[in-house]
Length: 300
Ligand SMILES: [Zn+2]
Image 1 (tube, helix red, strand yellow):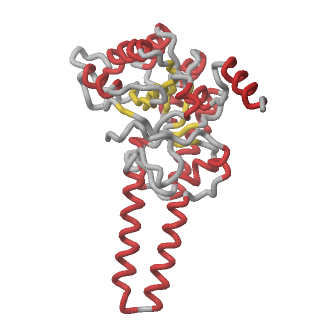
Image 2: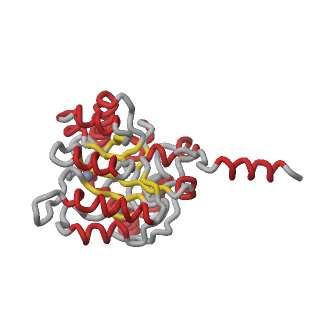
Image 3: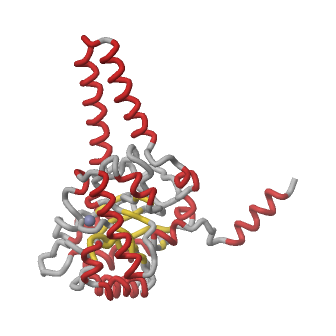
C-alpha cells in the first residue's frame, strides 16, 4: 500500500503515554453504539437505521485495522519523529527473524556500511535462536516485538488472545536480550481495536512504515530496491525481511542483494541509518545549534 510520504508523524510524546487506554476513535464508537441503541428504544420503528449505523461503524473500525498506516485505532509511527528527521536519520526495520540462514549475513552487511537497524523479531523464533537474537543487540542493533507466533489471524484475535501474543513475545525478548522492547509491529501490519490497550499496558509504541519493499513475495532485487528508495528521505521508516524472505533467481535471500545498494543510496543522500530507540531520542546531534538557539531565546 502506498500513501503520501508527507504524512508527518507524532513523536513519542508524553501525551501518548498519558492518553486514555482506548483511542478517541474507539471511545467515539462506543458512544455511537450507545446512541444507536437509545435511538432504537426511543423510536422502535427506526431500529433498521440503528442497526445500519452500528454496521457502518464496525466497517470503519475494521478498515482502520486493515490499513496498516492508519491511526484510527491509536498512535502509529509511519515516519520517524521530527527531531530524528532533522538529524537526517532513517530507520531500516527487518522483520520476521531471527533466521540463522539470513540474519548473520545481514549483520555483516550492516557492519560493513556502519549502519544500524531494528529487527522486529518473532517470539517463537527468538526462543529457537536466542544466541542470534543476542548477537543482533551485541552488534549495536535493536530487537523489538513482532508478536509471539506471527499468526495470520492476529487481527481476528479477541482481547485476551491478542494480549497473550504481544506479552509472550515481550517477556521472551526481554529475557533473551536483557532489554524490554519499546516498539511493536503487528504481523503484516494488521490489527484490531483490542491492540491499543495492550500496547499501552506494556509501554509499547506501534510502528508501521513509510515504505515497504514486499520482499517476502517479490523475487527481483531491483524492484524491491526501487520500492524502498522511491523518494527516500530523512525520517523514512523502511521495512524488509530476514525471516520469510523471498529468494532471488540465484537462490539468495532478496534482502542480501538489496541491502548494500539501499545503504549506498542512503549514504549518497547523507542519510544515517539508526535504530528506532536511537531515533526516538530527543537530543540534537548539533550541540552548537542548540546552544545558539538557547542564547537567542535568552536574549531580549
Ligand atoms: Zn512480519
